Image (cartoon, rainbow, N blue to C red):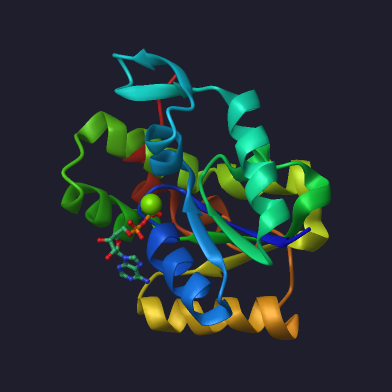
Length: 191
Ligand SMILES: Nc1ncnc2c1ncn2[C@@H]1O[C@H](COP(=O)(O)OP(=O)(O)O)[C@@H](O)[C@H]1O
Ligand SMILES: [Mg+2]
């Protein structure tokens, strides 16, 4: 059975850019879960309001297990990577981006404000890191801040974590603590 590295993070943090390069450098295969689901028809429905497909999780897990069994190293690129059973997963790299920088990257993707706001809010609340820690435990989850770094710098940091066990695992970039509240308020739902 092959080794699995999950690259997680809010959309726009650079998962696909990193995962593609990691797969090249480590001679692994790169699976972008969202495009894999579409390509393989692993969905049950389409949610018009959220403009997204409803994933057939059981079918997806079975397909991924087959691929993991046939390959030495699989890099899973997804913000819902937690569907991979814990036994299969070696490490999770969660990419983090300063909320203001993330907003800029998401406008460049052509997204609309409410979709951007929702995703930046998830980044502020460290949702991907908390989800990964809940499923895989703190010792296997490593964050990398991508703000003001090139994709190549992020790649080198990821290689150090994967190959040399460098860096400390766990939540490191809690924007609620690191940023003044007035910079974050516009992204947070007011109740
Ligand atoms: N470290 C980085 N610094 C600046 N821009 C980046 C970085 N990593 C990715 N990007 C850019 O951000 C956008 C989103 O990257 P992408 O890899 O598609 O993210 P994701 O797969 O997480 O949605 C792309 O335009 C990409 O070129
Ligand atoms: Mg992507």
